[in-house]
Amino acid sequence: MRFSSIAVVVCLAAAAALSAGCASSRIAQNKTVQVAGQKLEFGGVYDPRGNELSLSVNGDPVMRGSFPPYTPTLNLNAQYRGLDVRAECYFGSVLGSKGGVVGIVAGAVQSAHSKAGDKCDLHVGGKVVESLYF
Image (cartoon, rainbow, N blue to C red; front, top):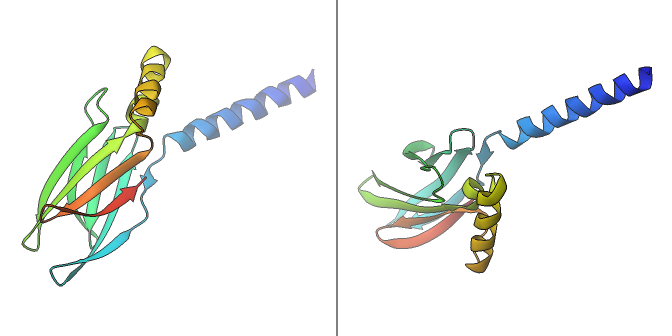
């Protein structure tokens, strides 16, 4: 009986740790580009608990937004040191993390369109300069 109680506690602790890890923020690897003689280092943080995305340039938070319910795309715009900066983001996990039929259908649609993963294409002056992956 003692072994059963310990096993249950261990299983519950593992499940809690796993679910806490799934809800933690994800940080993109920073990417650096040169545009119009300026060095721009892009970074980003995604918080799945609120579907919130924050993007930075040279450490300054310049773009922030939330994914609407059941919508895997988010477009953000900003001005940074006189440059037009834009991000076109597609986060498959926004739909894929939904349970049941929604998650299954979202996965099938994403596979059919060759869209997978969570990323933002970064534009400066109307041109794609880099992509951040989360």
